[in-house]
Length: 432
Image 1 (cartoon, helix red, strand yellow):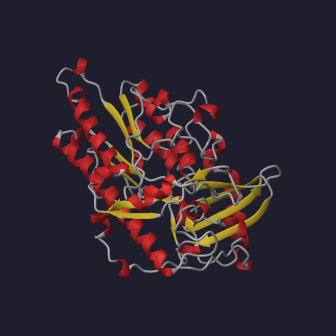
Image 2: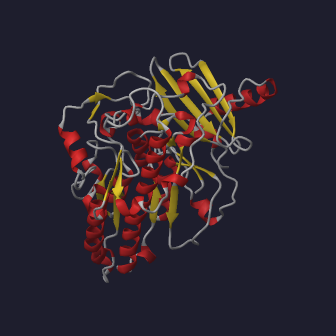
Image 3: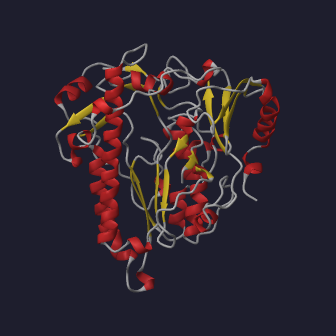
């Protein structure tokens, strides 16, 4: 799915949205501290829905957010595995030192009270995959598949139990640490530099100070990263993506070995997009296309392989899609649309828009809407609903969003139309 969008470009809220099938203004989760049961105590999560319908539900790794997992979602206790982000002595020593700093979560606040130890932002170690937490998670997931397969394939229907296995790999999340063999796949000198300029006419509120990256010891506290550090960070990101690719490959190979692939649906998704120095910015925490546009792949043995879907889709669509593919009833209150019609016909006319949002201090909420051609954003006062700032980008003629064209006189009618469309909301953007 080439045009999938998350509902808020940061880990916890986007996962709470995806795993409940509700948008952030419904879950009321906009931060990394709020548990889903605090705001929605009776909600049935995606994993729980499968568990309630006869599936064995198991969760490994980061699924909701670290420390915010939901016991009601699983048939057995959730497991995180080893916590190794680092293995080199230099970084392990830094972790032991008193290096606590306040962390900007992207809300342009000076401090959120969060802390992070200041080790390096990258690590290249000549170690096996299992030395890092994601390699260990792959090992755990393979063990789970081996254990779950016999029941899933039992000859007697009365003894058969399908499973829902959720595996939450962390990379390519910061820090960019991966075994050396994945770094060796890339020539750092050939990594191109990102587009450095901020989009013209974009308001200051659209940006962050990328404090998530600045909390690492080798990143400047203020100002930009130089060219050498920029290339190192991008190199590390590439290495982590390849590291993840290998771990996913291990799981798919195990499905094949166990002869499970013909009866198993696999979905791959990543929380959100990420800026790699574009606009001289890093991390997520914004409503830009780079932050809200996210990867998603669905593999279902009943449908052809290798098909690309260009239709606008959203993470809230995952819950109803998996439910329909598995023949489960849809619970009340879901705010997404099943994508099964797109699996049947990838060129089908579909959603008019995808919606994302991000909060800022002083009761400002940034609402962003992506249509087939445009990305339109309003930074609204949450009490009055007044749009304090607006942005408009032409994704056809300006895919990197180098200039907001919201103030151009010739776009006045377009801006009004997009404003009315945003005001009508996601319900009016659904496919007919």
